[in-house]
Length: 202
Figure 1 (spheres, rainbow, N blue to C red):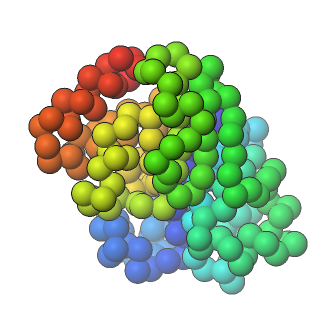
Figure 2 (cartoon, one colour; figure 1 turned 180 degrees about the vertical axis):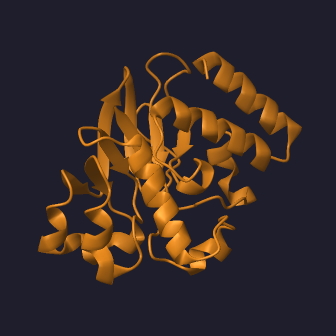
Figure 3 (cartoon, rainbow, N blue to C red; figure 1 turned 30 degrees about the horizontal axis):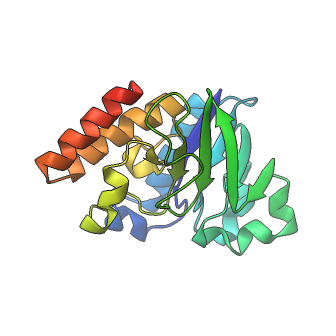
């Protein structure tokens, strides 16, 4: 099985307030995120992590040794130091800045930072359309992100919009549609998103 996730920020107490996460403490958050991960992910599953996995750089091994699966990290802005250490590399299949894969017949472009264009993003909506999986913006709602919200193929892998757990590609698509519909204020934009998603079979 293949899963996607992003922006866990393990060990980051302030992220609870910043993203309005439903946890009383950083210890509670960490344990819930790790438990949610391991409840789904088995040892031979692959997890694409779209950056900002952890915040507490003194406990890298503590976190990574507990997370099951074959981990591929697409480096985020908060992974710039710990992910370069030699002792961190053994926990991952790969650590990259950017990755393109084929998944269920679709091109999938992965980068921590959301992009306006990616491979096959201009293709007509259909079987060969390209998807972009990103992180970084958490569950922030702002008009500056409207181009992401109105594009059905831009998918936020952040735990804050995906039930605080790694998700399959189909779950990623479904969760993003729900989040985008809640974020968009224009009925025209909502109608456009629903129509595009319908064409894609979402």
